[in-house]
Length: 342
Image (cartoon, rainbow, N blue to C red):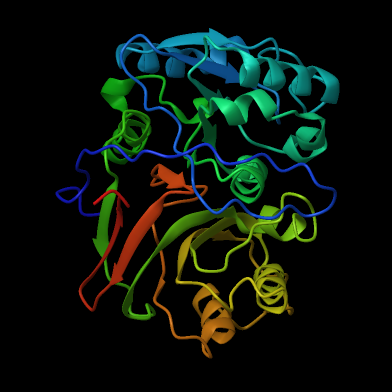
């Protein structure tokens, strides 16, 4: 990551779309709604819609967000535990619903990922939220929410680190930790996000503009055919994953190809992939680069590898559902948010 080229500041405004509650997969809204950007004194709600986390573990994030000038409101699921989950399905759904509907809360940060959002997404009612959207923040398992909001409501959200990634001691934190956490503040505050990184020899050169969508590849695969299924046509798609064997990554990309999700992209961004070692004698014989390039070789759009997003320290905030421009050049890659306002 070249830190010299990081950000500018400008607001992107949106329009509330018409609500859609038809059975089956929804017709995608034609316009994107950008929630209100935050200012000093605004409130960020913290809830655990997936895995368990306790009050001590979220304290560093509370202190940091309050140092940014925001207030915090702690949900009832923090400290709740139902085996691996942050409370029962009903408790997690009720807590998230309360934050969606609470007019005093201006953004919702998911405390951690893990697993559990798909178990409660159909319990949630987004009627009031759609009339006055607020930023929802998280990644990994929270890809369910990013995809659901984009497909059904056209509401932008923030793919980024969560409470469990804030360092305990900022004086000892690595620069990359500080920058990635600060990118959350920048995104929430309405700064135009811009990232520049070194070129990768496997990249496919080109330029593209489109709405940025994506998240965890395994989660996107499991959403296929559901009401939260992501429509990727005409968009810039980013993907990342962790703890998967190479053959499993290959299978997921075949799913993306066979389901048509790779066919009509404007561009593809491949983030971090933490790969499990193959079992002895069962080498897959292909890298992540090989797997991806095999699936996109018949298409004519830019592809960027090793983008700083995923289950890793260099996991920067991205605004899902917001228009971006990607430039994949011989010597560098630039991803920047763009505004439709002329």
